[in-house]
Length: 295
Image (cartoon, rainbow, N blue to C red; front, top):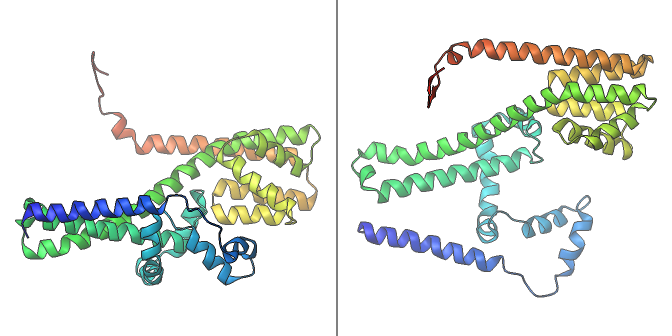
């Protein structure tokens, strides 16, 4: 097959899939089946209902998702066993604020790997620069592309988790001081958490909003806070929760405890800043070019 013909086949396939996907997302006029209407109400008690809802909420491309979803689901478990690190992945997902399960993330990571293999294979077959490579290199290039794509998706998750953890650590002292003011004004701990979660728009406020929602659903406050620390596994937040639960059990004044925790959090932020500056001391000595010279 000549190079123009190969490009024509490739672009024609992409165009066909694109048109097929556009047709699949057009509104469907018709009354839904009884099973589709009842299934969302039975998700907690019926496995079949979850399967029905799962079939009707395939993303991102409905047609391709419907076709390849069973194959991807069969490949997720062996792929997860090959990659490993389920506990670390679970922790990073929770730290990044994602609600995905580990299996869902592995499925997405597998899709990235397959796309990387497909793109690398297309490059080897269609681009003349790659056709000049040795046979072994051309055979290994798709594998390298798939592995790079899979680990690239994991790297994006790590960066998202690290950035969100840094934001939580920076927001925590302010949230603790606001909570201290609420308690000093005479509010209870649950009312203070509710006020902080509603007044703030940061990551800590969102997490506290989830804690308040769990308490309203009947979960004890100590259990909800402990669950929060187990999900996020952030040292500063864990110390705050441990001190708060201990104060609630012993009857210690909460305002004094939270004020001390806020001070400790700010001192820890200063230490982290100094450590970061020490690690980047050499890079900060590099001169920066500007239109009027070097500074």
